[in-house]
Length: 308
Image (cartoon, rainbow, N blue to C red):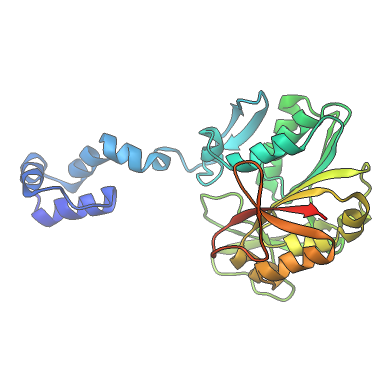
């Protein structure tokens, strides 16, 4: 017979709580002779399924096509619990997508820096139509496979250009670092010069493009950028473009990654953009919110840079 501790710790580990009463513990002890049987009982419960939905999915790479409410289709990996599954369930960066919908229009020329699997790039390609263009930059090979498949799936070859590259301050090469085992395909980042590769990570050499040295249709109306802490570097490499075309910019601000990759704070990044003639605003419910000079807290924040 199982002990009381077997049942209590099974609840704590699998359901993140203690059993509600002794009246629950005793029947479990009597009903099962092994911890395997006890585990099977708990993991098939409605409570476990609700609390641990992602762990029902396979962790092996498994690409599927997801039709979205907008009509576009994206290709996601079911093993990517952090982003892929949330796209699949229609709950990934909804405010950001709404801002894109409100901001990007027919005929616009736009940039997606850090395009990942193409969720934003496909929405923007749908919005700009055949008279506009999307240039999407993504250096991570696994994400590139999904991104290219999405372009084919939506038949956006006439308007979407995919570059297997990161964006940075200078054109050339750099090391892209990523975790060997991860449930998040969006965590790869540029390794600063001479920095060691962290334990449990791998690095590959990739191409880096400075947007000021890259031929683009003009004027660029909008930039979405999410490059894991390299945003200050990428926008420094686009200073001429920003002064010339004054695009609206939707950017992620990740304090820890900014420090690791660009060696700046969020306040310093915002000050850098102010020097280029941009004010920073928090992203609200699909619209620009209050003006800020620093981001609140240490979490990831979406901001909008508006030309003054």
